[in-house]
Length: 536
Image (cartoon, rainbow, N blue to C red; front, top):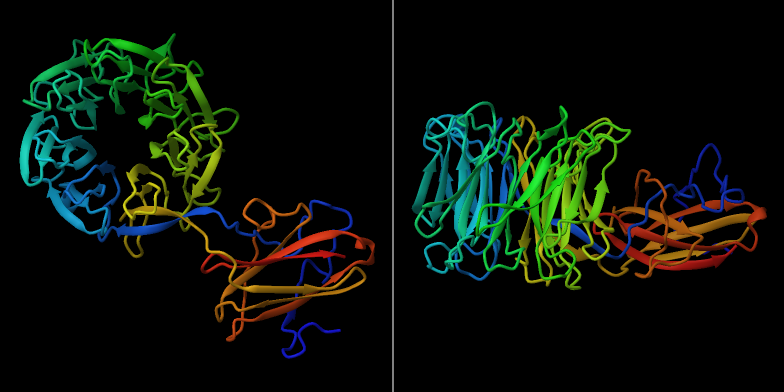
């Protein structure tokens, strides 16, 4: 009996050179039925706001930062920078509520590179609003670090006493002198003013009055201060602490890299982490929040150039802020540059553990697509991967945003600063992603057939001309009520103008008695159909 008598058979499935389940009886993992990847009805990410560069070499997203609440509406805001006209640089402060600019700060001279780094300063002037730290490595003779409260410049620190470029990295140092006001952290990794060589310098200024609280120089050509992080009070002495990296630190002539956590009270090291595998450990560091739920913030330390049998795979470690012990050690694949960017992701699953994320902008064998991966704080397991269209080097810069759309879960900011926006080159792009739960099944799948004959399939109640796929499993359902499959993707099959698709596939007689679960998906809205269970 034909299951769908009122509509014609549109096409058959073509699996290889034959129109039947070619390897079904020999490969119980089911190498292919329709060669598709079924989407789970689970948490995923979609763009909430998008910012695209409008000029060649704009490099939108060169830096990004979470700004707690710039406009006083109770919703987190964010910032991103771009090179702007003649590399003067611009920093956009953007409303988390609307995705629109709240204000735009601009460099004053050609090649200022204003916005080389950005950070949330906290509320320095006690007006109830978040202030902003901005680095400008090309300003003046040796760079500058600016601090703004709305349209008022609170401080402008210059690097005139050094022969480097202050502002390559900036951060909220946390309250290192315990005066109730957050302090300001910045660095010049290429400082030449120390007695001999390229040593790097890290400076902490008072957020209350701009006085220098700590100035740390280190011997050796280490690029000390390449990346910075305020940590909060990790040694329980009442003073905020901070971290700085030196990715060219070497032992016995071999570059290994190191990361040090410093006491805000004394400026002395609390602990030091180094990698002894001949890599540049500390190319990026970040405060990842309280990953292990011990009440102390933890530290992410990356080397995106790390190689272990493959080139440029990248590696990062999650380090306990309380003990300096590694909690997790995570590796990328060949050429990914995993750990090029690091950030906390907030507590996404409300278990008391901060999740964390890492960018890999070089991912892709023939093009650099890039990705951002989000990991579970409690276990270190991969929770989700955010990707974008090909060849944009997605994940160059990332940060947590907080819950801006009141869905109960933090959003994340992800940039692709080297992306092209045709016909523009290196225009850059910056996105805010919101996690959401894919909608419940909306389409109707029908399937009937048995071994030794045709299995007839039909999808109904879908959108007209929707791109659909059908998947199957021998392993049953996952927790979301969807089939489990890891099949490769194929070209989607469109429904007709009534939202209907039909087809058939031959099932060999040798598969008699085999259990199979089948499900469809509308790719346009990530909406799965019901699941059909059959015994062939």
